[in-house]
Length: 270
Ligand SMILES: Nc1nc(=O)c2c([nH]1)NC[C@@H]1CN(c3ccc(C(=O)N[C@@H](CCC(=O)O)C(=O)O)cc3)CN21
Ligand SMILES: CC(C)C(=O)C(=O)O
Ligand SMILES: [Mg+2]
Image 1: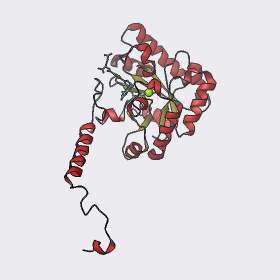
Image 2 (image 1 turned 30 degrees about the vertical axis):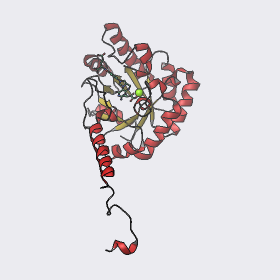
Image 3 (image 1 turned 90 degrees about the vertical axis):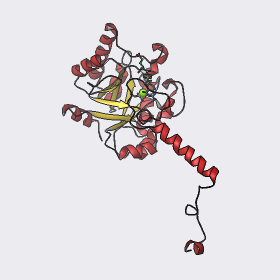
Image 4 (image 1 turned 180 degrees about the horizontal axis):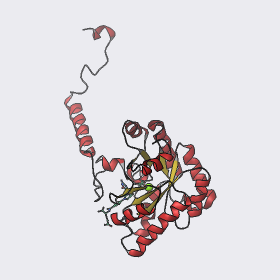
């Protein structure tokens, strides 16, 4: 995908949308060679790449730095970047400063968690010419309020609030909506009720698209295996095996070989 209009086009054509997170130029170059539709510079970067205990530790400068790196590697593919906690709760001016920094770093759009209390901010950002993606259900920036990473919307009242928030976000102008860790039946109902596409993570097969954290799907995130995750590679095992092989070769003196060394021009012929 190259533009925000591709989201509505895929959706109207009934074509599922595949997204992954991307934090750096190296993985961006790899993703750009694949058929994955679009990337998210997620604030999960604070946990996955910086080792913080939650996404609350992401900052606008952190998101901008990773967005710029992704842009250098991803070509013209569509990039959405998370607005980090609590920029969208600082009023229009505070929110716009974060949006400004992130868009100038190279994003095509921003994603904002939640709806209640900042629908006006989301509407203002869209009216400013910046596509906004919504995010409901498990909103990790609220981990301290939720008391952990739990499925959201299991009770009738919570499910109804998510359905109402989804409609309010669509009304505010979001181009797509992430549904994170809600029951599959609720995700299906929300998807059915909207004209914009839903992008699911841990929310079942009825969403209009799916997103996973790149390191999770590559099996590179040691010990992280929630129910919703399917791993498509043995990333950690492969990497650790390669590193141990390298270590062995160095200790055995078998790396580097003479062929992997530079020589005087005269000796190269012999
Ligand atoms: N690397 C990474 N991947 C993610 O998907 C991710 C992050 N980090 N950080 C922010 C949030 C946290 N996420 C999580 C973390 C744990 C569960 C989890 O353990 N879920 C339980 C279900 C618990 C319940 O039943 O309520 C599971 O078994 O899947 C879910 C989402 C998703 N997000
Ligand atoms: C998992 C996606 C939806 C996200 O918000 C992130 O990676 O930060
Ligand atoms: Mg996020």
